Image (cartoon, rainbow, N blue to C red):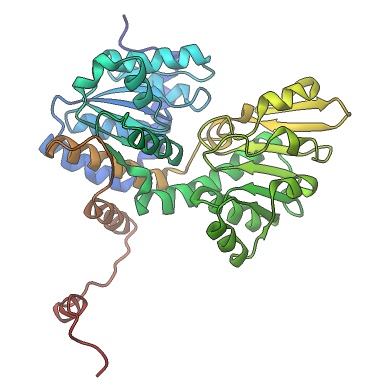
Length: 418
């Protein structure tokens, strides 16, 4: 079988231009790539990656390849692949299996093609690669030394696997680093989600009631950016601490059943199922818009929406109008999938620079390190701080360092009020 499957290799030249643009805004990965080329820490290692196949991911792939690794790539969402980018990767030798608009069967065919090569390290965004190898491709488990997970939803699934005793190899939760969730999740998701909504609708956000499901790091970013665009933001939550934080940050907080009656735009970002359910849709105004920025297309109950509708039509790219049995029009963006990737281009390269720097250094650490128990682990603090320091250096920003006296004071319990 061919060592790649993409939509059209004729798009490669355009893809290289997109990759060049991303590379120019990812200085941390550039520094890591420079070191990897000299040291070759991943020489001969097979890295199976199920990630959003975007221009930023291409920069990560080429960084890993510069370190001697053989990257096997499939997309982590049927609608997030940039066909130009994977064409460029395919024509320069990467084993890539991804194209935009896959069916579910095609999506998992690509996942299985990656596993056919027997990856020794896995890189996931949503844990579909890990789930598949644990459920239907168990013969490949013996090849794997460890893996990493990029997103909140995936970490939730993997911690559930660990709790059930089902996890068979160690996973590093890249998502839980400060340089990932505080920056990628908050600033990246915040900006790119608004971008996806505007590209697919062109509506004015100012003056709209904008309902955000959840108040984790991603949802915080969405709520903040929506407020910056002049929207009146409402937050719904199940966690009392996050709900209290949202109140203290100046947002209105209420249950989804109340928010459904007043909202103009609804965006979910929780990692859970049926955040916007059929009972909520029955309360919505004519013209309400729904979008999801969580990893899987289950946060909005699409079967319930279809069951309560008499008709559906596509008005624009990524914009479907449903006519309900009582005559209202409800709008769903990007088929309920990640609106920031399906209707826009995903996170800005500058924030993916941090996340993918974490991925690169974690891959090196896992491969060179001792065997670990099959659990979900945090990224070592020194890797997180190294990435942050490299980012500051790339931005030309200097910070203070502790003096010897200050370091001694911070480690002492004997000094107090004088």
